[in-house]
Image (cartoon, rainbow, N blue to C red; front, side, top):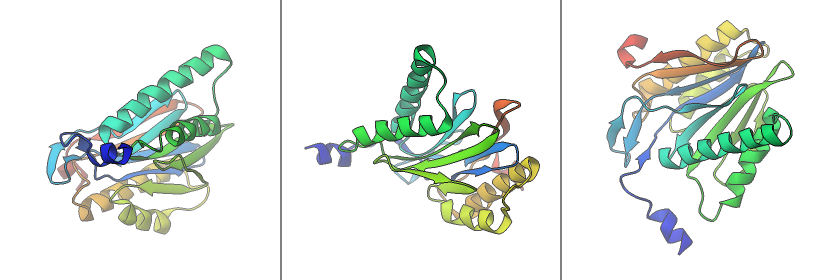
Length: 216
């Protein structure tokens, strides 16, 4: 019965054929994503979809998959992180990753149909994790990508990334990786959002380009 419910999710729910990524720099972490949401994999239902969310002052999350599921996860994470602040103190990026992994694992029989990239700053260093629907938590020292355009994004990241890359170069590389995916993956497009997380400024959206034509 539970598997049937998973297979018969509402047909009008947005799904994102997506390119999202994260990378670390000498000052922190960069998260980037395209802005296209599709309906049933055939119709572009939203050209301004948000796929990067601020969870806390120094933690951000990218989403790939069901928008409805992802938005619920974002609400749960924000609530849990705020409660942790009131109870004890702020969670580290690793602690937030473990919390999200536990939430996903607890729902694996009725999973949230998403992949996530969690990024943040901890003791002056950029930290990245990727998470799957079953709650698998994978650390990434340098970079990672998710979604239907991730193969193209990985190609650009592998070619251009160097350990200890400068923050400015990291921002440019993230933009180029998403742009490359948008040019080849029909499910990705309609602009790029880029967010940075640094010790100096915390979470900050640094690029939010709506039209693909602006990127050419």
